[in-house]
Image (cartoon, rainbow, N blue to C red; front, side):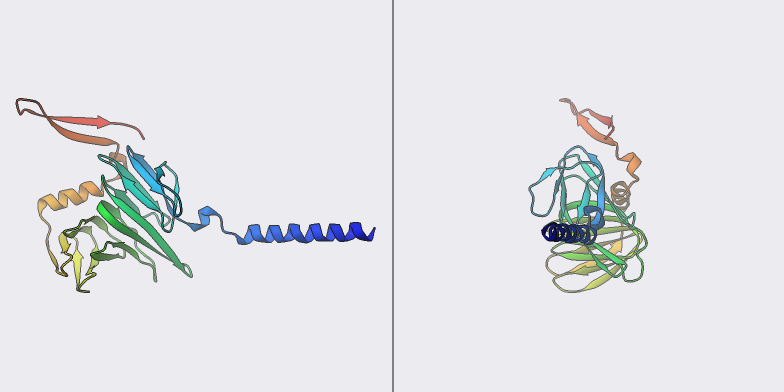
Length: 235
């Protein structure tokens, strides 16, 4: 009888320990920064410690996850604060995030390519950053596009204002709506009024998601005649 009582007590203790562990261990959803809300054509997702896989709509993203797009492909990332980042074709990035109390800071580290963004107003103590080996763009709430390449980073702002910093020289400029910032690996950083082409490119990069189900191409025949091809599809 005594032995049975001891076994029951041990089983109860182990059960309570397992229950406590289940409560303490955060679920993947609790650790997530956001999710991939849309996938168009060739999009890949790499979780920390795993290989690249074909991305699927609705997959959660945790700190350190990577996303990349192929030719004529788009991925839309929706963060937990409803900020949107539209990853354009031939782009690769890493998302990271951290909590400081209730403040949630997010970062998109660009390896190469172009993103359009609509960032919600950040709360006190929060920050949203785009970064590359050349530059850091610190955002409180605004819209525009950011392009990273080996020769220069280009920041086009369509709404609000962004602090743009060159990593090499630590020089900073404020890029306001209607302006473009250019940061180069040699440490130079400048801001100037955006050209009409830059404004159009930024608006296209950050356009509403319900327009992202359309791809348009200019085709030419052997005689040099041009024809515009439009493809509408469902994801």
